[in-house]
Image (cartoon, rainbow, N blue to C red; front, side, top):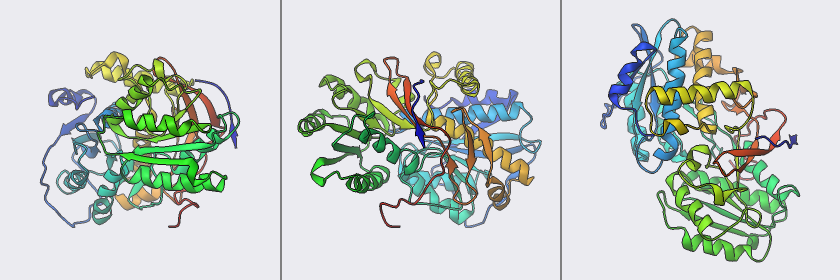
Length: 428
């Protein structure tokens, strides 16, 4: 199924977003106490606009990762509006900041659906943020497009999962590390941030490793809180654990903790050839803020990398760079793209296609029209929304970090593979 082939921030100011009038509409709201309502919302287009919600942390520990997804969503909305909008109407983005505060994700999503009357929400990164939104969109019959890899074990009729399920990222990554090409690791360190996604994913991986003959004594598992910044002791303990056998680290560290973690790897002289780190939540955006030279050769598993070469990706990267310059985003000249940005872009365009097929923003009809939607993605693959489980069929890619913070793709599937939301390694 797999084949190998080398290949390769900050919230927009309100004044900036006002300039969307030329090619689209956007507004920012920050009402922290939305009015609760159990009224079912199924259609939210009025006048000349259709409101869509952008729900990403633009402050707090997850801003390092999520701000770029807000920018991607606004770029895609600009592009859609410049091409005539949806059903002849312009999209109006309503941007809210849950500030890396998980209960606030629920409040903000309720605000978007009951007060702002959005037709759809694009957002979230951590699984705990998604779990906060899930009961709200189910209660109010809203739609959430969730663009990040996650632990599986979920299938809501009100969520479309455009990131990877475990069989589209975590399991293939470990298979690679067990293989001759991946170094034939005999010991594994499962190191993550202390919340749902890392713990559940590592539960799946621990069971998978045991099925491959890896003993419990050869698996080290440790978690740190969001925003953790001192990795000196942990990295030292990992080095000691790795002294006995060939070892690999599986990192599910999320947010800005990745910066001190990777810096500490460099400080302690850990080389990828001796102790490779395979990350599931580190991409081009996270590496943009650190010196990547000491990290050359460490790995990440995703479904897209900025470095892949094809016309669709060149077009996508150029659009993001042009957008960054036009709206004077921080470090616009160094704008990068990454996997969740691609998933955000794919999700918005698939939703547009489904609305046009349904002829309405009615949630039930759009949900039905989403089944089987396909889109030629920047990854170079045509991605398809599964007709049954609300997950995209996606390729698997593994990349090695380069000195410039980009990745050389060293492992990829020939075609997209269907997601398996429910892992066979842990019970439902």
